Image (cartoon, rainbow, N blue to C red):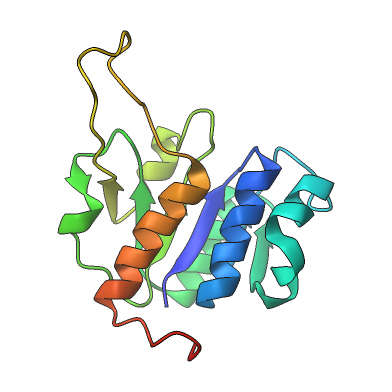
Length: 163
């Protein structure tokens, strides 16, 4: 099953909500440090509710440590970025993919996306009437849910209650 990777997340409730999604879908959650909060943060725990025991959580001290883990385990690294051109809906996911999401404030650095097998985006409507060209990105936890559930749909997600 695809694994979720958050690169240096900054906002505890977002990470907590992603953890809840991982618990509900039996997906691994990989956090690449440094984090913008303490893992024991109250708002992180509250957002994840009482599901934390069901989250296969892996912490990596830095980007090279994560890359070493990924190399050992195999699978494609799929970066998600508002700067990418290929929509996630036009991509064929595989069970051993690593779905990589960036920091809430500035996404993924170029040196990180350079390590990815491919870079995908979530297409968004950008209204012309919006003074700065429209919405730049979705909330991190929403982005993870959108892409993860498409990957699981493609991979024939089991019936509810069977994970």
